[in-house]
Length: 206
Image 1 (cartoon, rainbow, N blue to C red):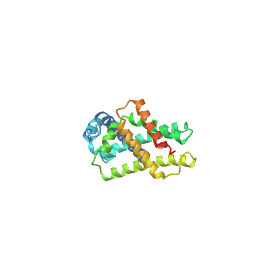
Image 2: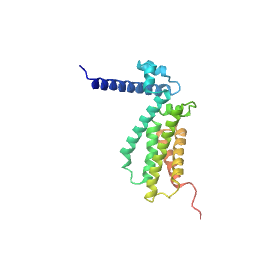
Image 3: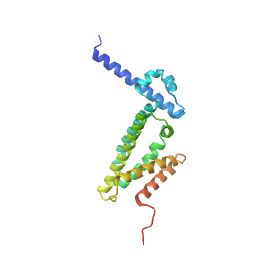
Image 4: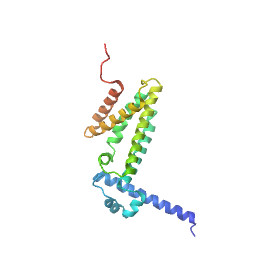
């Protein structure tokens, strides 16, 4: 006879497998149809799960998409940690950061759907809060990176919060403006942007 603990573990495993199946099916639909055109009904049909079962695991379509974005961010962090030791200076890290943003973000299957998601006006309050948390996480990453450069004397001791916001704004703007570019051109654009961010465009005064 199966013990109560074993039965509970089996139920938890089945629940996790269902959640994974829903997430994988939703990801494929978002990639192929886009964010707006994909409905919970589509996901239910693709998985054979009822809408109630989907809502048990994810509060809403927005919540499900955020779950996929969280996975994407975790994958991005793993790739960054694999590469960061190859950069000798923080300046090198910024150029490496720019390159990874192009190679990962612009080429990611969810990029188009993510753009739709963030430009979609109607979002529940809990989703807006989660987006704010994600942005704060990006700013913290930027601040930590820039602080390393200040601490080792590479960068001037400017207002770190402002510098982090400017860097984030630069990356967001570039992501919108470079979607139609060829890969190598996009990499060059991002790296030129980092160069201007670091050194400016004005000639030193005579």
